[in-house]
Length: 306
Image (cartoon, rainbow, N blue to C red; front, side):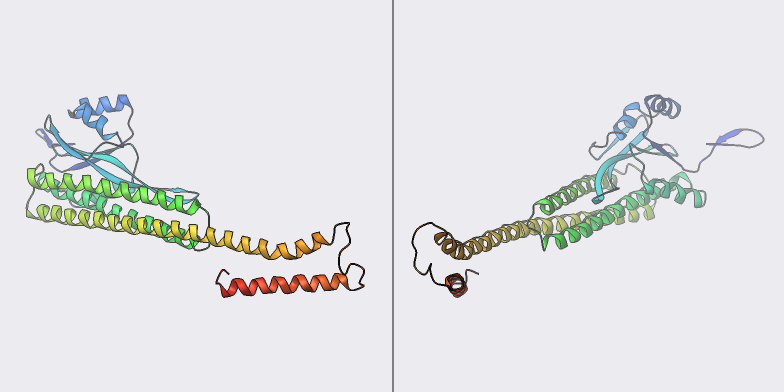
């Protein structure tokens, strides 16, 4: 944080990005005291369900926003939207989150590999980071949409409700993405209106690009969600129709099978019956049962029952 020449020690003017992931209470206190950052800023940043907002206090700026976290499970990739914070104090930028994300290291690598940058370029770096976060929402929406396509293929030959519940989970994920993007969009509008972070015209253009990309991601999530809702309604009706057809086929089978069963049951009784003494009585009754069954099948087909 400091550089020393022969005569005096001077504050290093370049920007430093630091990542703080799930710190304990002692470490939160240490950071708060060491860098004069409000304690509640760090605590708020660790709340995964906190709403998106901007706060300024003690010459520190808190930018609370949301980010999609993608995890692997037996059923596929799960998407959950959680809060994280960017805390700016002078030339220091803290990324504070309960859970780590690949873009955190990506951003720090981007800053470290670039040329030494002055504090005036802080806004451009922050907006670049928010742009990376907006890209993650687009990726998350595509992942959810790809899993919906897989469930569609299962639903083509299914009469169970399991696939519908899978679609319901994806519907919840898209809802969370859309809600998170709505909150992020409000934060970006505040950054644009309040000028919380000052920068030159390139930073302003980058912020506008982030706003456009966030709006596009939100529109994509909402469109996918509408399509998914329509798909759930259509396949719920299809499952009910498949179930009705199954009951119909079973009913027809029972009716057709009842004819030979009835004849066999009648001639199994210990009472005198016609043709019971004839040598070809069994063949005769079997043929009669077959003819009656075929006749009923023809009648059902003409009436479009089967």
